[in-house]
Length: 169
Image (cartoon, rainbow, N blue to C red; front, side):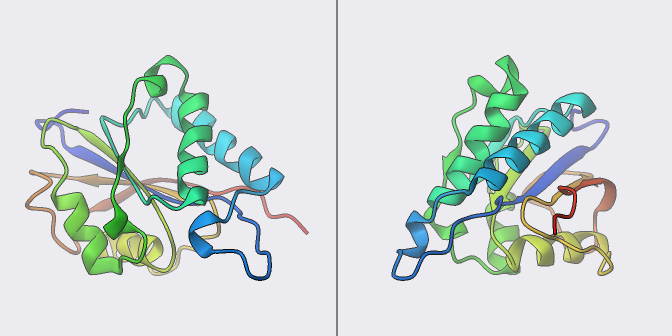
């Protein structure tokens, strides 16, 4: 998907992570379910033919592990990607996350942002106006946008796809 046909922003909330008392939040690993869900998200992207040209990722362990599973599921297309682990994405709010996307290279027609809630969900809502979306762990939104990344503005996108793991009891 090039600039002439539009761009795609893929917003992925990290997969299910462990919560252990006293564990540093940055070091929380994915659970087994989280690993499975992240791999399934990558398989969904692969089946949809959506390969990121740039990956913006929080440096938290759970987001890095989410990307690792997605990357493995993308196969050769994902194996060569070098994510931009930007510390600012860890505690970013919607406005800050939007700014990080605006800083992505224009040659990337598809950008994947792997982050945290509430910012990930708020970014999707802010770009698409879709406040009705439930955004559980490992939810993945595909947003069509036009123009440069630097010019990305609120309410300028269209939800083109959405995936989330099956609900578990």
